[in-house]
Length: 345
Image (tube, rainbow, N blue to C red; front, top):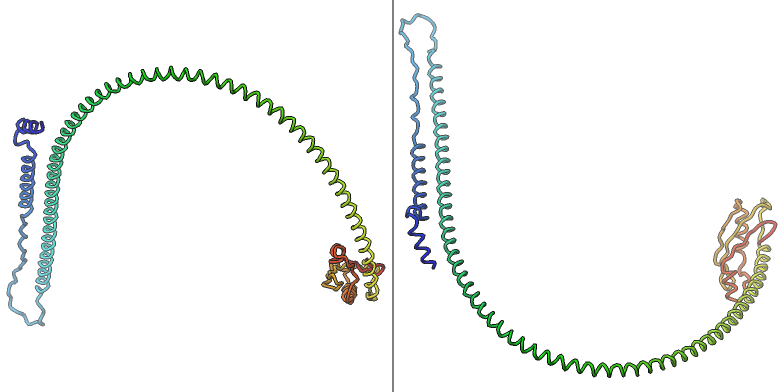
């Protein structure tokens, strides 16, 4: 099929329209244009002839006068400079012309290369298109044959499937009748068992409700007993705490009075002290009654008065403190005391 199509294409179009003929003609055209451009640009302009300026000098009889240099020397130098300038200009012109020709030649060569590359790519594209067309036709023929084979297989499979479907339908109807009879028997058995289970569940529910009520009553009674016991314990603990607090307070007041007494005996306020002066000190003790530190929390404004109170606090080697650790921690680990000429508290 592909061979016949190729013959028809070759016979149906003239030989000069074939891709190979067009490519050869395009190459010849590019070569002719390049040669013509080279011949047109290769003509070199003849440099103009050098101009020579001269003048006639009439020889005259020399007169007796001082020797004077010839006056035509500057003209010859000027002419020489003009000739050199003209030669230089002509050389520059020739160089520019040669550069222009070289650029034109390069441009023609690049155009030729581009045209050849374009023709080559076109030929390659046409060859690839022919190859792809052939492949497409072969693929189409393969797909057609494959589709026909699949259609035959499909029809055969449909026939077999229909036969199986009819057989399956017959078996399904028989199975349906059998299952329906089985379902009816099982339904009757299920209802019977459900009724028995319902009666047993009702009996168990009533029994569970009775036990739950008994447990709830027992729990309420136990909760009431625990609440009464906890209340009695709480009252007992409150009374014990109150008694302990009263005992600690009483004992702390006793030792506070003893400390004030010792400090009043050790304190010697200065003569400048007045009844309005008061200094408040913070005292920190050890459980043994030893002094750890003393700090002024509120001064009186009189340094001598404040220092006398500090000296009194530091002069005691051991403070009277209770032996009970709780009382000590609550009242004597750290406490404040005020020094005033009228009172010590």
